[in-house]
Image (cartoon, rainbow, N blue to C red; front, side, top):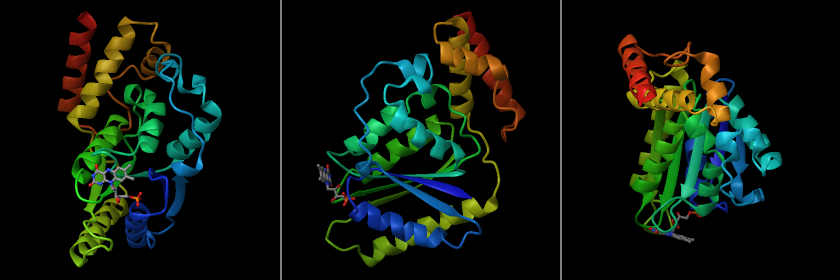
Length: 244
Ligand SMILES: Cc1cc2nc3c(=O)[nH]c(=O)nc-3n(C[C@H](O)[C@H](O)[C@H](O)COP(=O)(O)O)c2cc1C
């Protein structure tokens, strides 16, 4: 099981410690492999807002030489762990810049088989909103099962309560991974999928989206774990938006 970690702190500090405590709980999952991307060690330029990834395709990103390596690692992984310290009540700029480079994934999600874990640490506040944001990002990328660990240090060392909390949440995530199932697709994922599907069929200038949705042509991915009611609603959303 390949697990890619997107570490959004520029250093190996509090967030790194919490990440490693969580990884220690996961290490004995058979065949698990960790690949840690430390964003602080990669000189990824700032997203210039060219829209190329969204409109023309992710390989047209001006920073594709760096991004392709990262995208391929994420694509190949069954599990994504995203971490960030809280800066000014939100995720770090380092992580946000990476997420902006992945904006095309909001349009063409596709990660319905993967599972995710998000981790945020803070001195005192903002840990819940930062994890909520990261969870939303992974859900927009199509992940249907995202766990979270939100830690307020409040002193130099972790309290016993925090240590228990981190271990418990990591064990919960481990149980999720051991299940080995494809998570049930949520309404949010089906509705977003069909909204983009309809909008791109109305606007062929959205080249990358148009080609992506044309290939499947259905209300969701064929091998996803999704019930019929959600598919019916997905098709309804598609028809309503398509008619305009
Ligand atoms: C630029 C900057 C902004 C920060 N903003 C906040 C904040 O808004 N709220 C807070 O409680 N802690 C804030 N902190 C403290 C960090 O969130 C906290 O120390 C975190 O655990 C650091 O993680 P790291 O050691 O992985 O970098 C900030 C720290 C830095 C460097």
